[in-house]
Amino acid sequence: MALQTACEASQESRILPLLHPATRDQYAHGGRADHIPRRYAEMDGAELDRRISQAKAALGRRLLILGHHYQRDEIIKYADLRGDSFKLAQQAAARPEADYIVFCGVHFMAESADILSAPHQQVILPNPTAGCSMADMASIAEVEECWETLNEVLGEEAGLVPVTYINSAASLKAFCGEHGGIVCTSSNAFKVMEWAFSRGRRLLFFPDEHLGRNTGHAYGIPEEEMIVWNPKNPQEALDDEARLQRARLILWKGYCSTHMRFSVQQIAKARAEHPDITVIVHPECRREVVEAADLYGSTEYIIQQIEQAPAGSKWAVGTEINLVHRLAQEHPDKLIFCLDPIVCPCSTMYRIHPAYLAWVLEALVEGQVINQVKVAPEVAHWARVALDRMLALK
Ligand code: 13P
Image (cartoon, rainbow, N blue to C red):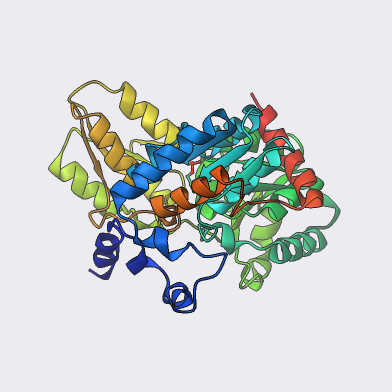
């Protein structure tokens, strides 16, 4: 119930009531440069729409707005290109004519865009607090400690290759670049796994345990040859020494809160109510959920499957609600619903409110770049090596 209330509250068009109390308090003291000015927070949807459209028109081809599929409709309608993490990373690298890339997504995506774009381009994340809780589950210090420990325990035969999901900080991508590893997204994890196993005996896969396990199963790795590394308690894996020695896939204990909400019970209910339904889920879901579904794949894959399906087909979808709602609206000839009855958006994607978009775009029109995401050059160098290895895979 509490979740429903929070979701309902987040549907409000004005942002002020949604701000963190600490941020609201700032306003009492005149506001601070790193927080959205109060006037934007007080504008209604119609005014924000007018301002965003005007600023976008004024900036013309100098501006590229990228929108991840999980963004709300009020944002996605302004995106020049929408896509999943992989497609947006490709797009960021392919549009050098734009001076400004406004990334409507989360922080790690904006970092990747900065790394992949040309030096003259500036990447802006409208709300700098739009992070990713999964990405925060692996820090560079924890990964370095894990790497050292594993190499020590496994010795000469370790043959470890690091693989990071794109949902990770740039420093982790740089770690992979520097240590012969690679980045993956949910749409190319299988190909990346093939690449990595052609270079080593074992993979250290972070930060999503579930994408790693689901891809490992597709690759043919039995569960006994996988082990979970809990950065909060590494001893658990170290105590299970026989399994650690046998492991080909070492899975970081991290997860996506949105995709963890999906369950086998929800799938059973959907099937009981609609015997001819097709269940499709994202690979960030737990193993048993992926096994119980008919199909699984990245956001882009889910969209393609539903788009290509015949009229009258029925779909129960296990991914973020903004995307599922949009699919249902765009395909009224099909039955499309979210597996989770307590529909709640990805809370960090949801932080990109139109008020933030209006704020950063109007600042650009004035020649001011705010909320820029800039990765330090030495980190960007090695992160790019790992990203380029991924982008080069056919
Ligand atoms: P994809 O965009 O790769 O489907 O992944 C979704 C996601 O994790 C967004 O944070």
